[in-house]
Length: 416
Image (cartoon, rainbow, N blue to C red; front, side, top):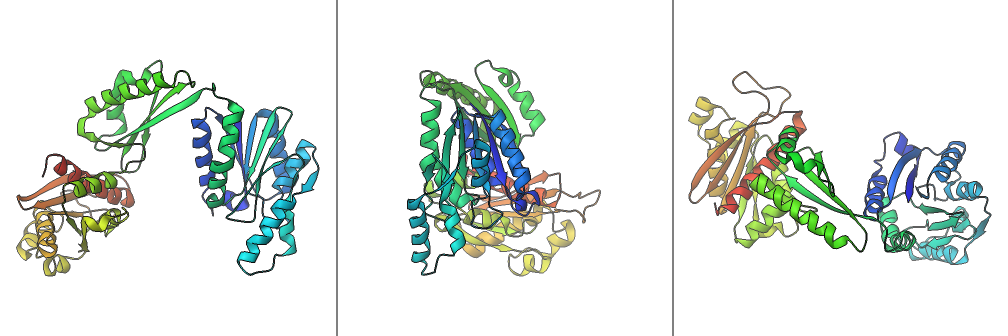
C-alpha cells in the first residue's frame, strides 16, 4: 500500500508551527508496512489544496490529511475531498450533538459556524473527537482510502490510535509485510567511525541498518521486514544483530528505543540508593534540568548551583583563588574543586561539575572553543575528564550535558 500525507495550514508553510504530525504518522504507517511516498504541505488556499488532493488520490492508495477541519471559511479539507471524490456533503446528527455538548460543558453557546464541522462526504465513517470540535472521517471509494484528521497533534494522535489504527490493520490484513524496528543508542563515537566499526553489518540481506546522527548522540536504526508468519524470524534477526553491535561497541551503547541517557542514569542511581548534585558553569543549568525532567528525580537529585562567575565559584563552591589564577576557570583543577564543593554543600553521594568554553567567542590557542572539563566527586575521591567538542554554542552545551550524564553512567557501571 502506497501512502501520502497532506498537511494543510499556512502556518506550516511560514514556519510558525512545526509539522510534527507528519513525522508521527509516517512512523505509525511504517510500522504497519505502509510505505509513505510523499509528504505534501499546502497553505489555506482552496484552489491549491484541490490540486494537491487530485494528485495525491491519483498516485496513492492511501491519503491522510491533517488540518482544515475548523469552523472558519478557509477550513475546506472535507469539502474539497468530497469534490475530488465526487461525493455529496451530508450532516451527521451524532457529531453535531457531540459538538453542542462540547460547548455545553464549557457553559458557552455554540457559534453557528461550528455546525459546519458536523458535515462530511457521504459514506464517511466518522471518527469522534472528544478533545475538540473537529471529528475526523474515513472514506473508501474506488480502491482508494482517504483519512481526514484534525491538525492539532493533541487531537490527531489519540484519534489515530483509537480509530484509524484498527481500520488500517484491517485494510492491510494479517499477512501484510510489517516493519520490525529497533533503535540502538550510542554515545562517544562519530558517524564515520561508527560506520567503520559496524562495517559488514551495514549490508545484511535480511535486515536494514541505518545510522542517524543526533545533536548529542548516534542512533543505529535496525529494520527487519516480516509477515505475521515470519515475525519470529525477524525478531531473532534483530536480537542477533543487536548483540553483535553491543559486543563491538561495548559501553558506548547506553540504551535502545525509548530509553534516554538521563533515564538510564536515574534508574542506576535509584537502584544503588545514591544521590547526586551538580555544579555548572558552561551548561548554565541544563544538566540540572536534564535530571529534573525525569519523573521521581527528587529521589536521587538533591539540587545544584549554576556558578557562571568566578566569584560564585569561590563564594559558594569554595574554589580557591589560587586555582583560578594559576589554571583558569576552564581547567581540570577547577572542575575538581567545583565537584567537591557542591558535594560538600549538599551532602550528596556523588557530584558532577561542568566548566568550559561554549563559544562562539572566548577561545584561544591554548584553550579553544569547545574545550570542556567535567568533574566527578565521590567519597572515594575526585576526578576530572577533558573533552574537546566541536560545533555551535548550543551543540557544545548539549554535548557537555550528555557527556556528564555518560560519565555518571560509566562510573555507576563500575560502582564508582
